[in-house]
Length: 106
Image (tube, rainbow, N blue to C red; front, side, top):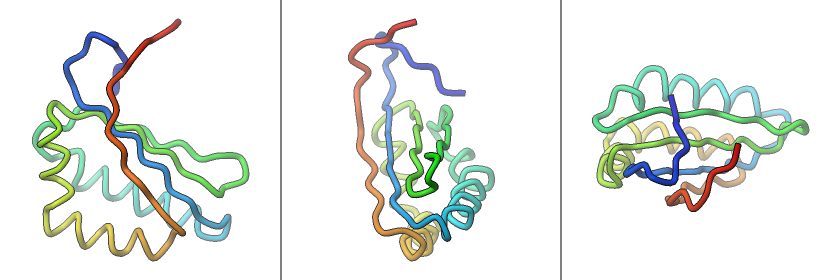
């Protein structure tokens, strides 16, 4: 389960996907399958969440990894490269961006 903390020594990745409402459910199913059957089993995986906007035109994915290299190794794997090709067909664009937690409130 993701934990947001400024003091955590982990890699946070936020990925946004843009799609049409007609492909949102298909994309969500593909992402859910990727996490359940592959990504969550990779070395260094800590946790993730998938968020869908009301208009079903965007999915935001928040994931955490022990190290930047763990996330990069998962992305470079043959299985994830094949999955990303299929995911790309269902959306206009997607972009994973690595972040450091700057502050937390609440």
